[in-house]
Image (tube, rainbow, N blue to C red; front, side):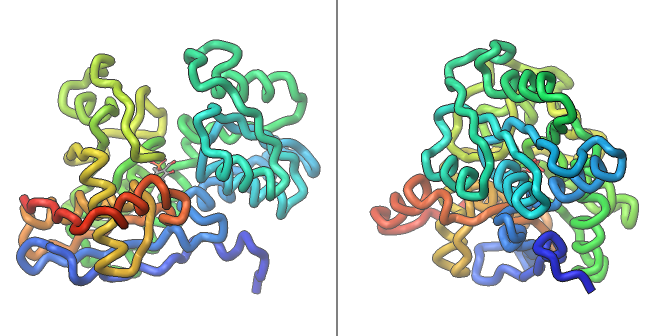
Length: 326
Ligand SMILES: Cc1ncc(COP(=O)(O)O)c(C=O)c1O
């Protein structure tokens, strides 16, 4: 039996969320992805992509892993690199909080901070910087989570089957927000192969391009706008996002996501991040449209990272608004 830290990735619990305002006899189940050892759903893809690179000789012992990331993927890379003796170079925009940078450095990663105002394609832009470092560092390996098909494959091979087994196949809807699309497309593909009647619903923040792209087949650049929820939505089409697997896209606001995150904390004792709030908000809304449905979602990371952003406001707010159903 394997006892390494990386063997603790995956097989997360699926719990039923009670005491939430759900539609008629609907049930909501959440996969606790924040219980992965690196603290998020991203442990799954980093472990899988690194193992594949090792097998194919793309990453040699003592080699370097490079990626542009501001959050959970960076933490997963730093963890795997510390465990397996790799150098990790992570580029990020300077808007990323000092605490998040410190977490990565604490695990030995090198953090390259780039100006947030740099435009995509500029040598100073954090994505371009990672590409340039990778290109200039012979033998380095880039995870490339947005366009690497192994991202969705990791979820197809682990998260999807786990959900199928944990629900005994009793699932009507899988609901999740997405950035790279790895989670929703990997899980969605597995579940649809098992039962094509299962509906896959993407939740997309206002300010992201996915909602309009799904319904019109076109990117409307005028819709790109800042929003506060982290880790979901996009301003470009990620290669991993396969819309043929998605049945519906529902839009949410920061208020929807953060309100539901606070509701989750107060009603369940589950303190999660904003994307978890978005996922629970979406599940509640959809439960109003699908009476009796068994709905599954994921809680990608924990709320401790967003205390000042999501929860300190809650301390001042006397009541949390509940989302309208349907
Ligand atoms: C907090 C959080 N939630 C959700 C996601 C979305 O996951 P995916 O990239 O698999 O679509 C991410 C991705 O970075 C994330 O960091």
